[in-house]
Length: 403
Image (cartoon, rainbow, N blue to C red; front, side):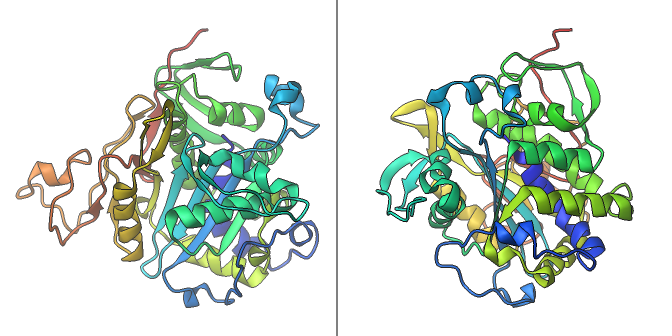
């Protein structure tokens, strides 16, 4: 839902830290609001010493801030909708050398085991064997919500997640404006009365509230599910990544400084993420990653046998993703959710391993099944893991334009 602002951090760090943190004092609001993570360990100042790569949890909060609550209808006006939910959950993985970046989206309707957390009063909450993942932020409250989401996804993924950050709806709007908007392609137009979004077919530069509408839309794309929305958000994220590494942002010191200040004022970090040296290290690690090695993937799920409107983890497919990341292997996403996304450019192939004259098309088709025992080229993920790379230019497959 708020994927925009959160993912802005994913790629903005690559330029913001290097260009701005030398002259920017992080010891103010950013550090003051930092949250301690469960089992937090001392993090070395050089991320090269973090074995297995860097993992960062990025959480989008739907809390109703006074300055923006008027634009969100029943969510912020109906008392029954009180509380704060983590409707966006992203796990950013930066591999060891050679550097690759993978962003995994966990849908808000995912039913998972929820461990005991510490609430705002310092009391332990009751664990749940199966509960919707977007309840974990509220379970920990304003003080410990981020830590509760971190504990839940750490247990689900089995990964050591060293860093975490949270952003709100208002932060999404401000960060989008700080970079001058993001261009998105809309194939069929989008009409969604729930978010009041109405976009004609074509390319749009989304800014402010309209960008948030696009990221929140669910009934305007695909089958109306959160899965379709997650894939639609990847249209935005891939475009965001391309803009971040372009001269419009990384090559513009004024934009970088504005972006740095906006992030510092609108992001709640974990205490492990407040070191200027560490932020610069993360920036340098991401700075030169090729676009085709920046991948946005959806965590694999199956329909919940107890509720067709919810999903449960596909652990077998997820294990293949975790194994590829642990081995620092290049990955090839099996395909996109065609109901929500359409390709504007062909899926890139690895020129080092693809010879058009000799290659079997089944091994390069991104929708083909993985090749057992393959040892060269990128690892083809299971079909149940959809997504795209930042090199792929895609369009939102809207439900039509009501002009």
